[in-house]
Length: 113
Length: 123
Image (cartoon, rainbow over the protein chains, first blue to last red):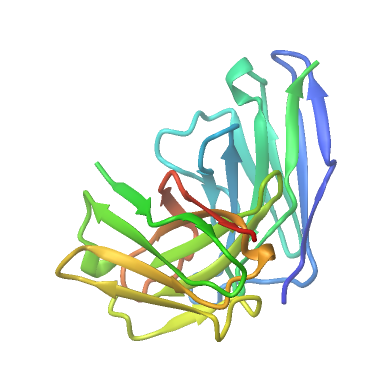
């Protein structure tokens, strides 16, 4: 199984500042059919289901604000919130969809400082 | 608009069974695979099972293999998760989620999620 880890476990950032979340996989993965990294990011607010933010490591889902930026390749990936807004307080999860079992990182909680 | 609505959760004793349903609307159901993902109270996300758009392939997490069965009814636009031999560690909110790309296309990210159905396994 591919193990996904995230760092930090939690972070607090001032409004308008940058938040950076790291995600690391236990093995490198790349879809040979499209040369893309099968890595997604989700945002989950309390009492709500997760919401897709980013797929293929860097493609923003329709309707997601452009302050959410996905990057990385190989085994190291990053979600950056370029200018934190109050509504971004949530837990963020990364997920690999290269192979079953599809696995998630443990989550990173983002708060306002 | 795409909607996924789970139902069938509840309280069950260890060793018991439950069947969850996921009613889908707002997209061409027969073109998309559906996943089940669960979240234990206060914990992270765990992928549980997947059924391909044509039910030709089904995949399960090791933790539920042999106990859970995923199926789909295209006439009802519904996916089911039959859960047997339930254990306390199966206690979680169960979400169904739509595969992000149609048919055989690569991309098992989850672009739409239901609101979840709580399953509690306790004596």
